[in-house]
Image (tube, rainbow, N blue to C red; front, side, top):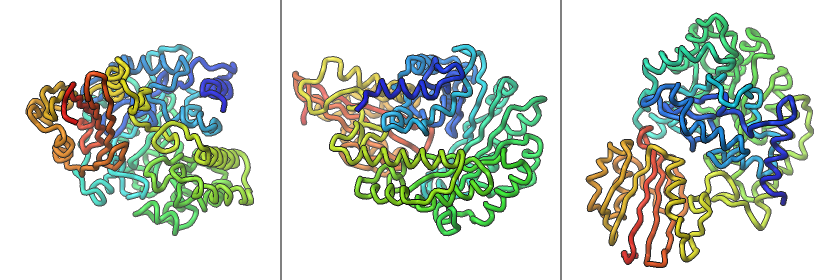
Length: 506
């Protein structure tokens, strides 16, 4: 197999700028800011590990010029994917350069490496949504959060100060994109759209919608902004579509899609599609719908939840799907044919990976999200641990959760000292001294109203992710345990570690 460095170099060349050479593997951190529903700013929707800042604590200007933003820019200028860009690295590793996510930012390449203003902003400001899609969760849908998960609503993260600061940035944008929840329902994204509509020269606006909302306010915004509309469509039949997009009617969405085309023209309307285990059999039919309307279509690589991801299938499950797609009589042209070829090729590459006797590193045949021991190159079974092992592991956690690290020292199974950031004040960290370390996961889970999942390495659920790495030092038993939580409240995201000293009980 060719080395990853060679693959990365080839991907850069194929996706290069007009001059044929790229000075950065990806231009997202140089030109774009993505604001999520928790009030966090990131470079793009795929990089969740590097947070540029928090709107509740920092201004937009501070986040754009933050040390984390600079670190990410520098890494990508060195063609280094390690600063949270595991999804794109994985795509390259598996040979999927044709659908490489980072290529979507090539057109944003600035003339200077440190621009004063971002030229693109992407807004996922709320989880307000009227649907309960099977592949979604309560962080992205208020309906799922309240009905399926029975969780408290997400607190609003964007206050008056944010919108006041935003007004200074909007005139410098060439592109503004609105993503989920449902942008046409959330008060925050609608407010930004109306701010854009007041500009003398609004940027190009793209709105991704489930296609179910057609209020008078929505159509006024469409009339004023003349945006590009992207309609999420996950089936080519009512049966398949409605089984996935729970709460929507296929006929209504198709009717709204055609109305968007009538009002804006086919060049300003496109489709987006989640290709999954539940709808792959209609993939060609859906592309055919786009072909009949002369619409571009974009296809999402679904990794989670695992039971709906084609990329979680073992070889004996994936092989017949790839074979069936290869047998399909393809009647597509242009961009639709590119989508067919690109994602069929990606699934074929995937089949090669899971059929191989030597899978790529990672918990699920090389999918992004490797255990911490793999992230830092540590072998949990190796004795002794390298002298810098703990520091390396701590560095990774600090990089992933700069404001949410909780460090706990323990002796004989009892916590003796706590070092915590302000993000953990809700837990009353000082009160943890004297707590039995084994009870800490249950205590944390109780504090966030989450279920405890007790497995070794790793376990994922919608509420708690647990990692445990045991490491032995020459001076006695010393275990390192880290837990990463996906919690109810945005400020309750973080990680903690425990280290038991020499001679402690096993």
